[in-house]
Amino acid sequence: MSISVPERTLHDGLTLPVIGLGTYALKGNQGVSAIQHAIDSVGYRLLDSAYNYENEGTVGEAVRRCSVTRDELIITSKLPGRYHNYNLAISTIEESLYRANLDYYDLYLIHWPNPNQDLYVEAWQALIDAKKQGLIHSIGVCNFLPQHIERLVHETSVKPSINQIELHPYFNQASQREWHEQHQVATQSWSPLVRGNDVLQHNELLQIGSSHNKTVSQVILRWHYQLGAISIPKSATPERQLENISIFDFSLSPSEMNSISALTKPDGRIHNQDPAVYEEF
Image (cartoon, rainbow, N blue to C red; front, top):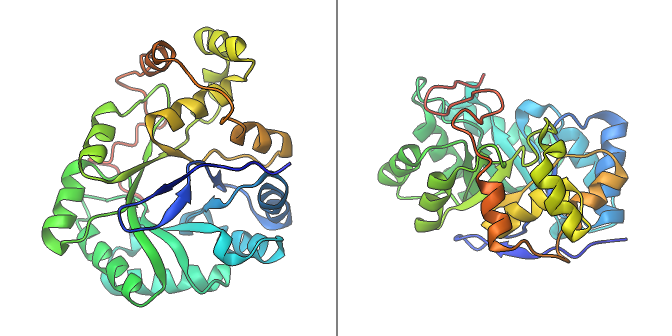
């Protein structure tokens, strides 16, 4: 059973599905099989990876084994913090492509701003130039605060197409999402299901799910969709892959949306990774 997923067009013209497959920790032949199944049997077309996940090769192999053509897929990877230097960033982008045996990435992101290192503008210029060379079709960022993005635009005149941020019911990022909407930067959610946590047993979410004959995971992913966010839940299990993408046959009411958003906490980050101070290796 292959699910048809709605799409969204970014400000630079790239069109991508509103839900994709996170691939963190999917490695080796098992990872290839899981990703291939997600593509061929379930209908995923957006694949999210990163240099630091050490699985770009796995993603590339799944792409080669799957039954759809390369141009039907949207493949993402990310530049790690230790390679923000311009020359290192260029060679790392090239290395990402070599690892995956791809000619281009549809979307390439700076994984974290690493503000203490203060090289993220240099890294951004590398992504701009790699796009001009055809190595990347669309460029964006992860975990950037508004002030970081404003600096990128001020110093390079190029705005990210997307910002991938921690976003889930315990950390709803309302102000960040509002800023994105005002500036035409798409919001993408990492850890949209709070990495399992206790959220899947939350009584209020269970009640909402029961009223729609849906699981808590489906309710949360529908919440992301109705917020306008692009989610990338990870699963290696065929049943969960199908469950996660089967969210387009019901709707949450405004009161249900508000109830889920109200679960947010001031300290809701999973690992307290505040982009204002966090430094990725």
